[in-house]
Image 1 (cartoon, rainbow, N blue to C red):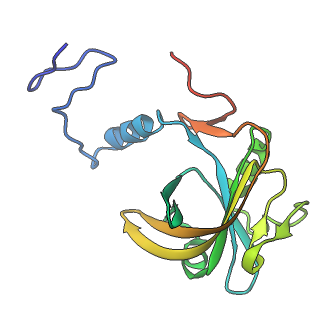
Image 2 (image 1 turned 45 degrees about the vertical axis):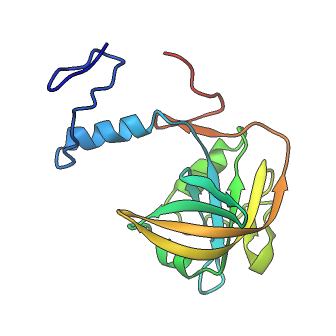
Length: 185
């Protein structure tokens, strides 16, 4: 079926003539819902702040950029209390969570300031960056650049060391954690 000027597309079809009006709360919510149709992996990005204290935050806006040189990126909201620490950090680690680590994802998504208190299995990586236990992947990175990304900052890192373990990834889809990929509705 072809959608033409001003027509309403039937459910399941895209209307390419629609424009975004982000001054409208309902339209902002709809944008979040459409973006949520893309399943992503869940990570915890860790570093140390200027005082040397460990910090970490749950992130699903992570992707590879380049294999040569080995670059990755992730995004952090401008309103995050941790933004300056990550911008100033020389290194960070991306800890890719397994399907069994939803509680850890929720823990690091909280606004707690003592996220590493009583958290077992943490070891220091390159430049003392905290590495979390039982992750299915870890990338230790040198911070290379920060770029403007609207209401987020895009942080680019060069991979210096990596580790992979067996297991299934924890996913984020339609606003929820899941261990299963998206299914047809």
